[in-house]
Amino acid sequence: MKLTYPACFYPCEEKKGGYTVEVPDLPGCVSEGNSLADAITMATDAASGWVLDELEDGNQIPVSSPVNKIIPDEGGFVSMLVLDMDSYAEKYGDKAVRKNLTIPAWLNTFAENNHINFSQVLQDALVDIYQNQA
Image 1 (cartoon, helix red, strand yellow):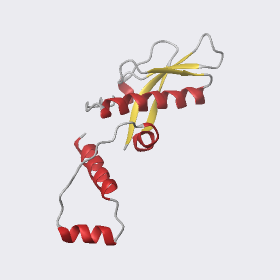
Image 2 (cartoon, rainbow, N blue to C red; image 1 turned 90 degrees about the horizontal axis):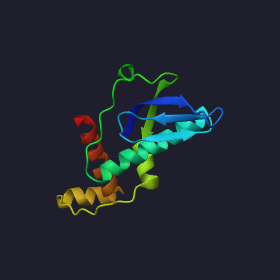
Image 3 (cartoon, rainbow, N blue to C red; image 1 turned 120 degrees about the horizontal axis):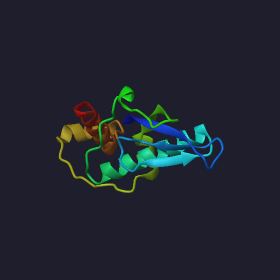
């Protein structure tokens, strides 16, 4: 699942060339970096962690505001962050929930003969349903 959120970038007074980044749609999500590229990386990581925590706790994640609706404070600018939640969750996700399921025997035989990963199929289907509801 890929998500996008607008972020406000402000030059750091303490770090020459550095930036502080705030993600208005994710309350309290603030990061900084020693350069613009570093700030983007750090903000993407902070926002991904914020969203993953919400998802793991069973909470709804905020809808992204349109980029033209975000007005930065003086001296700042707005840019979009792209969050790859699948990669982030695979690397940093702590919680996994075991689920038992029941399927017809013929479907089980088909899946096993074709080396289909049941967990991956279920995850993909649930992510698809989740994305289509947003």
